[in-house]
Length: 303
Image 1 (cartoon, helix red, strand yellow):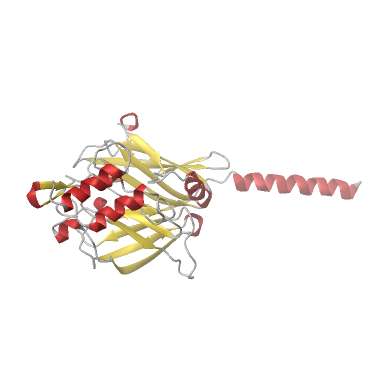
Image 2 (cartoon, one colour):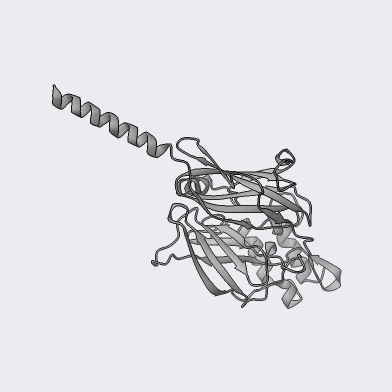
């Protein structure tokens, strides 16, 4: 009878220990603000276990004026529609969230909310005021091409492969941030979002000059710091990364086959191409033949 009793005590102890482990709050680290535009910003951080991100936004450092009801808060914002990416990020403890509906050139304050996926236990960071701040950019400047035709893209998408330090590829849901020299906030991309794994795509239009607070034109060769957010495995950072040469129409002065091919690749759902909403010329929520014809007409001097 005694061995049975010891067995039951041991089993209860193990179950109790498991409950304690599962009930532990998420430990938050490596929090940064990214993708700051005139009307939105994102916050990125790591958790030491599977977790769900949320965000509180205030107009004052003490957190007395919460404006979440006026904003669109999007956990793990995606360019594509692959729900598995959100699951991979959550399970790995990679936490990214975006707040949109903000005013330009305005300072806001935020508090991250990290919810343990297993238990629902909540971690608030920081735990009390004053809260960290972020100032939205002044203006998003569009580039004009000859004949005063508005060119709708400030910068191209930055597409990079993200091998880890051990030489293996970064997995789905890993978040990559790029901080370009001269800008004040990094831009981010999620591995597998709109592109094939192990690539990540960043929106170059979200890179703003730290002094002028308008879009920073990229020509290729800019020095940048690349950081991979791995959640439970922390971060990996390397510097002196040079952005690849750009193939932007505003640099060539004309729209060319590059833009036509990009639109056709998006239209036909080709892999390795980011579903960049800036290519939606007529704002119908789709990228198709209208956009292709638009660029062809510019090339033929019909616009």
